Length: 206
Image (cartoon, rainbow, N blue to C red; front, side, top):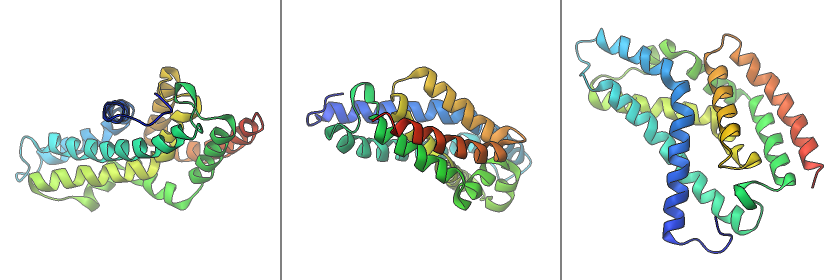
């Protein structure tokens, strides 16, 4: 991407890149929630055949909103060369982002959002809404919790380069483990400390 002023096509391409990437990275970790929703919906006579798709659509729209937000953030960072070639942050900025992400991993807000993502049945029992609109609204709610859990993790794409495929795969696997592994909550805390240490080391390379 150019460091000059973006054209309309640039904006569209960057947004499309983030929207596709968020869908590809977050859908695998949302699989257990979709499956649990389908099971519960089948037991409720008020649930329509398309409820699961509406739930998934709400989830994806939430992450599409995040894609729009991070596109807006990327523009000034790239114009000021904080984000350099290959859409990668300078070492100091990348280190600070790692430190911020590590701190966030240890916060009560992260824990609360992760708890909602790690307990599909608990989410459905407390957030259930009937009908097609309810399914869509629940998908939005779950997407919002996932954004609260993972927004800084997704921003870490800038540390190694937003188009770095191995880095994207590693973050996808990490998010999946956080949400699905029995020890995922502990992984979140331990990783937070590791990110802080890595951020300090990276920032020292400036």
